[in-house]
Every structure is written in structure tokens, then in C-alpha cells.
Image (cartoon, rainbow, N blue to C red):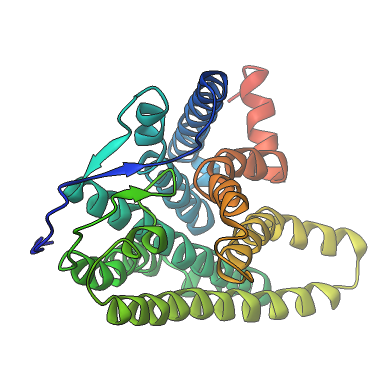
Length: 309
């Protein structure tokens, strides 16, 4: 990613959460606690899946990718926030800001793609159980996972390239705790119409595309589950996708708020709070959602705690 800008502003100030020293320390402790648990929880999922033979399936392969994504997603944002909370300057260089924006949004796009892939995987498992292992083989699993990662980074490379060519010659205070696109590019002293349009089109394609795949998959999943004659069979089938569905609802719920709001200025502080949910809290909740709501994982954890193999 080549940076070619004519800016006279070499660094920016991330305003974050202005307030008293007590507020800054409290937020620092909160972010540090959440970040530490997020990394440990998601690493635990990866280790559990990679070391237990019963979990060597496409479903848990995608879960490993998702856990790894959550670690990198929160790492792209939270460590810099921690540093700024304890710093007086709260500064970030132009290149640093561009890279942070690129990685945060790239990982965000990868999350949309992976959620859609995981929904499609559950659709095949529930709607075509006899053909599932043939269709969703190891080759297809790897291709879909790699495609999600590559696609997420390629999508954001276009707006990142355009932003790198903007000029910044006036205010340098970004009213956010990380380099979000909207509060950053409004500081530019050049026309940002093209950047805004490209971002809108790219995000619309990513969000709506992944949402349609996920929604259609679950329509077929639910209709198939409802046709299962026994209540126990329906419960067993639904348990295989309930964790993923919970994560989808949380992720898309916060996304809808961030992109559908009446006024940026009126809801700016609330937007920051919802962004914390996306970048810090959700990656923390996912390991607990997948362990506490997944019957197979819970059974394996209970055996491990009892010292059984």
C-alpha cells in the first residue's frame, strides 16, 4: 500500500474519551481487562480445536479462523487506545492512522465474509447432511477461509489508497478513539466525494452481500429444522447453529446502528460506545458464546476438567 499524499499535517490527535484522570484510568483498566480476556479466550478456542480429534471438522476449522480473526481485530484497535489513555499527547502519525484504519476495516470485512461462510456451512450440514462431508471437504473449507481473508483485505485497499492521497492542512483532531474513516476524512482540505462514494459502495456490497447469504442460509436452516418430526431432533439440529446465530445477531445489530442513524453529531458519543461493543466486547463474548452454547464443546471441556481424554 503506497502512501502518496500532499498533506502538511504529519500527525493526528485521537480525542478518544475526554474527561477526568479517574475516567481515563477506569477506561484503561476496562480495555486492558477485556483485551486480555479476549486474547486468552480465543487462543483457548484455537488450542482446543487444534488438539482435539473430535473437533477436526469444517465447522470448527472456520471457528478457528474466526477466533484468530477476533484476536487480530481487537489488537488492531485496543493497544493504541490503551497507550493513548495513559498518554498526554494521544497522537498518531499519518501513516500509523492509515495503517490502523486499513487493518481495522479489513478485519471487519473478513468478519462479514467469515460469518457468511459459517452460515453456508451450517446450511449444508443441516439441509444436506448426507452430502455434507462430500461437498464441504477440506479443500473447499480452506478455499472459503482463504477467500474471506484475502477478500477483506482487497476490499479495503481501494478506499485506503484513495485516502492516502488526501491532503490535510488544518485541524488534526479525530473525534474517536481509533482512526475511523468518517471522523478522519472530514478533516481533509480536499474533496472527499470520491472517497465517500467508494466507501459507501464497498461497504454496501460487503454488508448487504454477506447479510443476504447469511439470511437466506438461515431461512433454509429454520425451515428444515421445523420439518424434523421429533423435538429432540429439532433441538439437536438447532444447537449446531445457535452459537453462530447469536454472534450474527450481535454483530449485525451493532452494524445497523452504526450505519443507520439520524445524525452523526447527535449520536457521536453513543456511536463510540457501540464501536467499543464491536471492537472490544464482541470479540470477548464470542469465545464464551461458542463454549457455553455449543453442546459438543461443553462436553469436551467437562471431560478435560475431569482429567479424561
